[in-house]
Image (tube, rainbow, N blue to C red; front, side):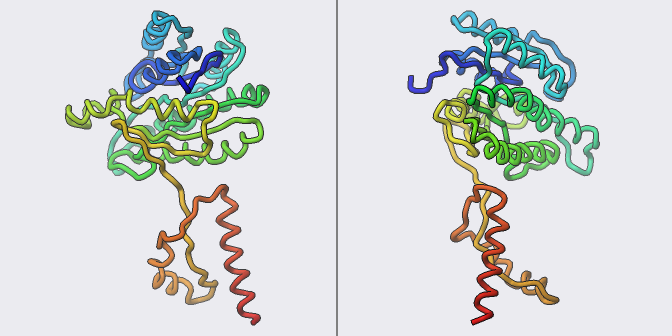
Length: 306
């Protein structure tokens, strides 16, 4: 196998079932020692038991691999730090973090309680922040790390009834963008995966024939590529039903309109030109937007002097 994780240590959150379980099993099959984390709660985040994580560990052990179970909630930073220390005590390093843990509290925004909005943000976004923060100094010291954020098409493109989930999933893209820049000098690569997979999170949302096409196993190849030694960084891979795509945050060429009393009307009149996608770019940092805008202003000023 070309992608090999022998000697590496991986932490996969939310790995007691569904996509996370498939991630953990695949990493173990390719040689990784895997800490399987799962709160063991319902898909809305209630309840909890380490039994789900232990069941996956038992599968890995039965196949001849190495694994440990952990039942920490990713919303509890102290528990997350203890989880990472568990991996360090057992194996002495952490090479891979797959932030997969998540819950659903779906309702239209008008009917959604703010507590449900906050909880989903806390699990998906702050859960990933907690886990990443706990492994970051380890990866920095060893000058190697691969971190995967689990985003979603609901975050990238929106989905009715998932304002909380979508906001959290798009926030993870922003987190990835900055961490990939900050981690580059220490060989820490950070990517996003936007999976379309049938798990208990989606089992009552799709017809049976679609669920069969969207088995979680079909997403796993994208995960393996994004955490491999020669992984890219700052990549958003979409995956489902054996198909793979990339999503990009782009910037159009736009137009320079200046800033005077009539600029709002000028912008409204030329908005289609501003949003025209011909020649759009994928900025390598947030500074590119500002630099592009200043460059157009300076070019206009130079023309005015001619």
